[in-house]
Length: 599
Image (cartoon, rainbow, N blue to C red):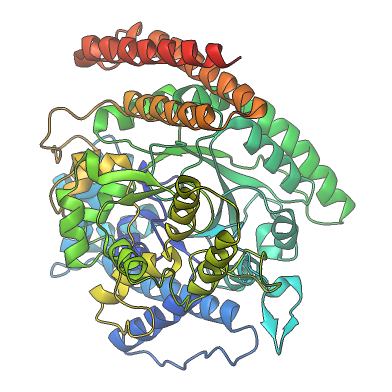
């Protein structure tokens, strides 16, 4: 059955969407939870076991394979409870039809399900017929899970390294694979060949004869080439990618992957033009692999969805993306941080997010993963980090140890945000022959890293009044730049009304078009990279900047054709779009002149 909504809620942080399925799945809305933090997962399982009055037995870290077992148990709880909520919604009686009305009211006006329901109610059908119709036509939202492929720390028992399947990402994958869920695994942050190969160990990821796959694979990507490479790699293992989820390189929340200046419009167009090639080539590899492994061969076509996310802010942009690029769904992330009915954000943080302006949202270097990270200025985790620096005790205690990936000082790995790592790194820095300015610059690079693997889950603990003694109460939050244009707490009905154009939840009239905002972010990013190059010249980096600039040039040319020359799209914004494109083009010309001087 096709999705009932044309939007989904992407994963946000570690805790912000950890229980979103319990809030939105019964209304047909897909959401994604993070599988990074099994400690938080176990705490949430205990919380909801008590709330729903179901038996709970702790899975301690002394249990063999505790990480996978914790994840499986929590996912099973989500599965069972969302099924129960959904079944109650469909169990129509004269006294209990408000949940069904809520479900229907949230749907877009063009929804066939909505049209059918309105027709039936106008005809005055009895509740038995309405119940029969609901069971046949309503669909529950998918409980999808996200694994950052590079967060795959090796683990030890009695100082002996455990086999690779006990690595963090591998164990999380196993936790999902052994759960009751029929949903999707979202793989992000690039390819991990060992992890991808491990997927092939689980039967739920393979298609049956009719092409049904119980556990589907979604690849989150920023460009077509990467998608094609990863899709073919998985196909050679007999694994089908059911969805390519294209995310803006910079106009998104969380970690940002700027690519080589590829703008989302041209990237989406490349997927649209080459979708058939992608399908045919990966399908050929898939069938050959399944045949060689003596596995079931699907006799029908396998579904392939193309979706997008990053900075979309109104119905006009939402509809344009769907129609222009034949997309199946649009991800709406950051605005949902202001929707308590959908996400888990503590009151102080939600207030800061609602008041955030452009200057408060910036791309930082605080992530221990070494990838640029969107963050909110003045978040309490960074305030606590600075307080420790001021006390000459930089770094944190690293209670969760999920990002202990640096092996510079320890074979078992350290997190670069930890006190232990920063102490050793600063000691090393003291031994180097550097002038005061160079030493200060290197000092700042070391101490700016923040413990996000704790901070991104703390908000959920605070909201649910759970213990934060071990982790502290500092909150990290990772909204995208689009957060600046949403300034009030919204209901679930309110934001769906906004997405589908029934209401406007953006009070500011100066919000830039999604494509222009991303272009502006990329232009600024290129200027920053150029400024760094001037300080430390590198020929390889210069070639990269030339490629980056050329791709932005092509992007502007593409937008001139698509956004300006097509009369039916963005009708009221033509002049604003024209001026904005000219402005970014003039900035790019000046940057190009500076680059040429360095050749």
